[in-house]
Image (cartoon, rainbow, N blue to C red):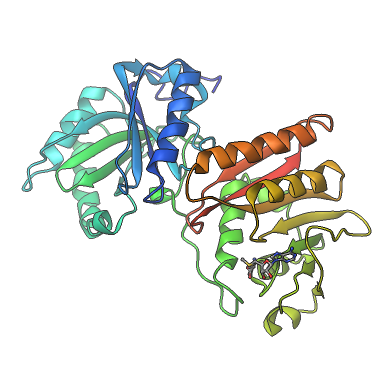
Length: 364
Ligand SMILES: C[S@@+](CC[C@H](N)C(=O)[O-])C[C@H]1O[C@@H](n2cnc3c(N)ncnc32)[C@H](O)[C@@H]1O
């Protein structure tokens, strides 16, 4: 973040990340690393199965000095990452708006719009109806107080996170720094006729791991792709749906609906040893294997020029998940260090459970 942003002067009390319930410890570890790197002094808090982790600075700090720590793309276990500036406790049930508006006003920051959210837990999601109902009255109250300027583009979005019915965290979502999806969860529809639900994972990966401009430029009809561990064909379905020709590698059977597209060649072969005769644009991989084996294979395909872009899953161990991800990063770094600079983006997607999904390409 080299340019001062519209909220650079906002005094922030730290960072909040949203995650899948059960991954708070991993997210807390990553946010702590970001804070240390940015020279922010404070402490991190995360309760198991709450769906979020908080870093709190010892002193309110201008947002402009958070540097790259506010970039939501960096922590792999964060679906969303936002700087927070107030926590409003003991909200009265009859009038939650007044104390929230007072806290926003006290910050001196103006916002373009307001988004009410809950963590992604079964318990918290029961408040999603309330969030919908409360959005309009709160927006009106904020507008009246001069805190919302919907006509002014470039202002941050005010995120209000209800961690319980009477506690709201107030956060500033700056364009380009945070996920644009409410709760950090892209709304995707299961395509009819798709062979498996895991088709959603690759659809989400394209949304989350590729930049907006890249989705049309590096992923195009007419390209060639390989799908390692393709059966029954959910990922292949996504590629074919975008007009790519796919070589599907798996000893298991592919669904008839996928093969009927006539865009797919199915080869019963071992994904670890099979190689294409000439380079392809894309290789995707969903083989269930040790993450270190997959990471090494992916780096080798990219490093040797067998494919230009790859998206792959890394299955996580039950314990020491963050270490497993770091080990994969290191394996890739070692393999590609003599090849050239590369982009590696890793995220725990909404459709991921005990795995993360990664995008890897050489920088050109
Ligand atoms: C999770 S499933 C893939 C699901 C697929 N992406 C989809 O969307 O339908 C994992 C697949 O990897 C395949 N697989 C595992 N090890 C493999 C290997 N060494 N070579 C090729 N396929 C392998 C399995 O047969 C299985 O079909």
